[in-house]
Structures are given as C-alpha cells and as structure tokens.
Picture 1 (cartoon, rainbow, N blue to C red):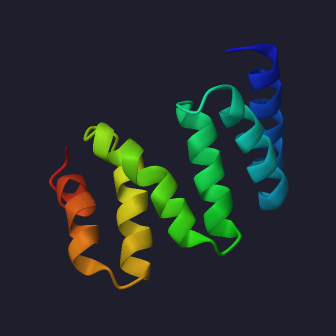
Picture 2: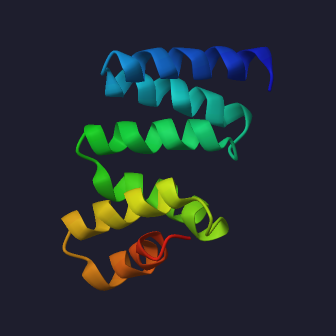
Picture 3: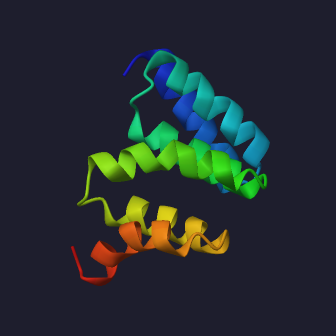
Length: 103
C-alpha cells in the first residue's frame, strides 16, 4: 500500500476506535480512492455507514465482498444481521446459512 493509503487507513482506524464514524468514513474513502479493493477500508467504511444510520449503503458496500469470499464468515454474518434488521429474511438467509453451518 502507498503511504497515502496507509495514512488514511491509520486515521480511519483511529476515528473508528474513538467512535467518530463520519471521520472514519472520510478516511476510509480516502484509502479506497487509492485502492477500491482494500478489504480493511471497505470494512471500516461499511461499519461507519451503519453507525451513521446508512445501513443500506453499508450492506451494498459489503455484499460484493461477502459474495466473493464464502469463507469470510465475519463479513457474511454482518451482512446477514443487517439484512435481518431490515426484515429481509430470505436475503439474510443466504448469508447466515453458511455461518450457522460453520463454514
């Protein structure tokens, strides 16, 4: 990762730890501007979006990651929980079934 991306990720992690989701999102998106595939930056951005009440955007951010890696139990479980919170039970089952089965 570039110095700019490392710096942005570090600032995003700090803002996340300090429960400043708007700042965390800004820094995570700066890191994503350098590399849109960075899993940690996408994860921090999604968590920040959820904390800001923008859960649909958070789901949209993580679904491609969960779909791309069926072994990523953490991401699949989080997408499933967020979908359940929106009463999207059938869609949530897709993400939670493998989690419960112990992928």
